[in-house]
Image 1 (cartoon, rainbow, N blue to C red):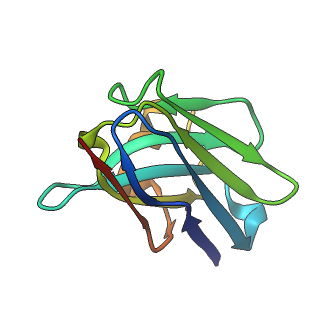
Image 2: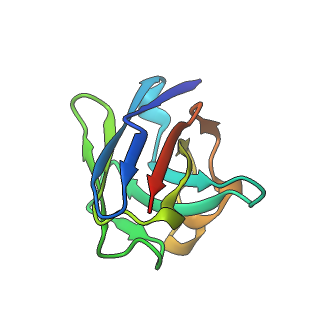
Length: 128
């Protein structure tokens, strides 16, 4: 199995920045990619960003493109999400997740069902 622990959330004002981290442990060699998703109250879980361990592939939701940056530390099995220019609509619980699936079509990594293991989530609240 793979375990994920997300940290770094908090309460910030609009325009501020936050850096989330996802520590991956366990059978890390089975992990092909790690994605960040978020879920606001009353809404479905939505894709934010994803990164593959063994390539330079990254992908972002349109709503965060240009503001968020996903990065990885292969040696320490950590994936970070740098969030800049935060907006109130970014408020949500942010989850990181790992998948063992390999797809040629990158868009498949945007789907919740692609991911096998999930972390517990970290709350991000952006006040206006």
